[in-house]
Amino acid sequence: MRASLYLALAYLKPKRHLMTVINLLAVLGTLIGVMVLVVVTSIMNGFDVTWKEKILAFEPHVTIFAYSRGLEEEDPLFEQLLEMESVEAASPFIQSIVMAQSEFTTGHPMIRGVNPGTDTLYKRLADDHEDTLSAGTFELDEMQCVIGVDLAYNLDVRVGETISVFSPATFAREGEILLPEDLEIVGIFDVGMHQIDSGFIITDMQTSRDVLGMQDGIHGVQVFGDDLMLADDLAEEIAFEIKFRYQVRSWKQLNEQLFNALTMEKSMMFFLLLIISLVASFLVSSTLIMMSVQKTREIGLLKSMGFRNSSVMGVFLVYGLIQGVVGIATGIGTGLLVLHQRENILNGLSKLVGFEVLPKQLYFLDSLPAKVVPQEIVTIGVLVLVLCVLAGVLPAWLAARKNPVEALRHD
Image (tube, rainbow, N blue to C red):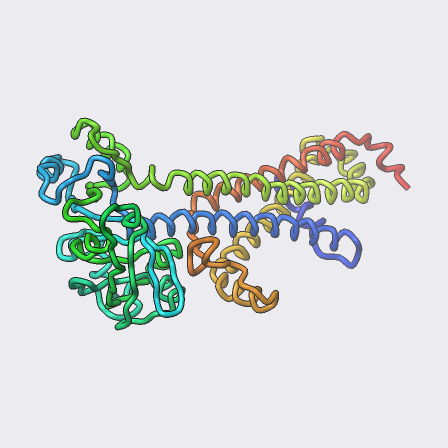
């Protein structure tokens, strides 16, 4: 093995001929393949984690919907839920699509009515106000509201101004006409997810009832368990406990389509980008074939001196292995560097092409997320290394089976 390593390093030593350029191209191909895999998988992981964080900042672990049957704010259901061991909190909510109009334009967000002092999600936003509050305050009173930053931009309104809000559902009522309610904007929140920042108006319970023309009642219950990852089990337990009187959905079920699409996209991207590494392994294979042709006389000399086929084969396998290791190591390093500078790169590309490369409206996020998972980096490295070694097996075997007499007569 020592002789094989020594000869492989000697062959890899830079010289002023074509093989040096070909060696560099083989390493560069591996580098690019590994770099792209590291960057793409880390960004996909970032989207997955960030979307979960943003969604859970505005959604409970489990939601009980009572639109069809109706539910009272003091319903015994709350005591029944809080008696369950896996339930930590339960709070009522009112939620419906409304029309919002400012002096300049209109929008159609959701209005969410909550009890500001007891609602878990609202208290979480208020407690984390340094990160979630763009302007104003989270202190709500009657006929006041807090809206998302993108909704405020779309309606061209600021803190202290008013918007007219009314429900399309009230138009169908006979014998009465409900006029729009003017709500004062006391705060503007920014959770960093366009779907939420552009789609919600938060008010207290009574204000939302006035807007929707409700005398009493609520639309559902927000439930929080002791483990968000077991939300599906908690939803099933609650549904069984309340004898399936209401629709019960976990946060995973409500966003199942989004995360399934992300998982499928990540798998497909990994498979397609792995082809780049496969092409790089062909470069390694081509390099070894050219090297075996160039070193035909040396192979004959080695075999005449007593080198076994396995030893000659080892020279070329180590040769390809070193190329792969160098390409993988530099590829991982380059990928981590690109991830570290991803925002600067993204801004530079946006300026270069003249439009926003990562529009918030499309990906729902205001920045490019990334999460490096060490296990995936190791998997990428091992997988690409296996491809490089397999690519070197055939050229090494062809070199090892050469007849020493014919090899010495070469040229």
